[in-house]
Image 1 (tube, rainbow, N blue to C red):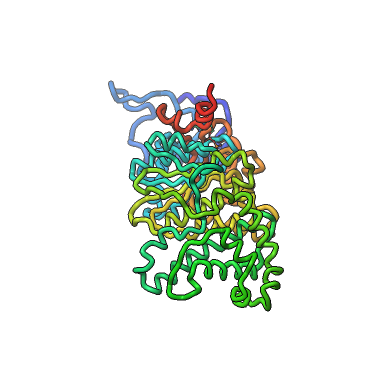
Image 2 (image 1 turned 90 degrees about the horizontal axis):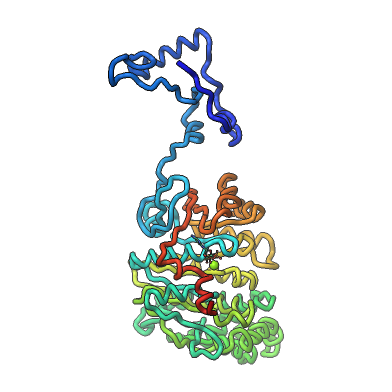
Length: 505
Ligand SMILES: Nc1ncnc2c1ncn2[C@@H]1O[C@H](COP(=O)(O)OP(=O)(O)O)[C@@H](O)[C@H]1O
Ligand SMILES: [Mg+2]
């Protein structure tokens, strides 16, 4: 039998050793080896001569496979053999693109994944350099999940890039901006406050605790914007103030929404009763002790919150519409701080609005560009963390779009606290979608997420070669996926096209 030279390129042993493995040597030669081979050949092959039976239709090709024969265990063969099995995710949910390893379709079905125990929660976090296709993939997911009846809430559309998508499904986004009539009160009660009078006392108690916890976390985050960390005493003063202003501390089980300027006024000019409740010997001592936090809140009330987040809410979310979006595009000119504060307020308010959604419905809450909120400090990160942790609904999918791991590590916070929050956030989002990163960031990401070296190199290499490519980590399974846009979707998803349409050619 004529032996052919193996094709040029790396040989199998080289290939295996490049990936850290080692193949056993070629099958042993010599008498005993030949003997064993004959035995195996007799076992594994039909009893026929090397070139088959010399009869019409029975011979086989005399061309030998251009490979040397090796023996290896299935563990090693699995790593080198180019036959890849199907990806193991059920083909249900939104078809997003194709799996670059198997060339099969890649479907995203976060709720189905939870039901099939592939992931422990349905939340997704996206990482990637700007312009790599994160928002496009999120929009594709939203539009394609809408086909399954999912309701979408875009909690803060900083660039106004979700507006074409809203218009395409016949929905007018809610625009926030100075001079516009829309006000959002982040200290709303939300659906938890519905039919309050008919609730039993224990349920009122539980809901009031949830509502106050959200309020206090947000107020702390807002105070943190000015670089002030609210002390435990400040925090308890905030809790007392909101309980007092909402009418809860008067007993009788009543509760009303309060506004941030009301909280500021109560802290700036506390009553004697409030000072006593907060265990200050006098009103003046309370004013002096909480001055920094109070003033930090005061500057926001007069600044970033003014005309936007300082009065009762004037809009209602329409949960019958396929999508609702809070557009913050008009705030962009007002600077990063205003955008960050707006995102923190809108995120907190959105959590309230999605409390107690009808069971059985799938809601997707999108938080794009969260790094702008993260930059406000550790309080803002904690606020987002709480928003995720306290979303109480089955069937609610949280989608977070970040840039890089350090987005999650707020500036100036103590090292261990940063890491704890980032890890927490990772655990809260069991699906990580990683678009292209520079090699150093890819390494950071690999550390945080627990990527193998190969997957890390995909993030730093393969993904960078084309927009729309990402490494998806679904639970502990890893996929290389390219998002595909249909021609109809391109104008809806394309940020640049949307901007061009806005500003003219
Ligand atoms: N899957 C894709 N295929 C082709 N082009 C894409 C794809 N995803 C994104 N793009 C292009 O890249 C641009 C930036 O995408 P975008 O989703 O806004 O990125 P990011 O949110 O990561 O900053 C889009 O306007 C589009 O032109
Ligand atoms: Mg984007």
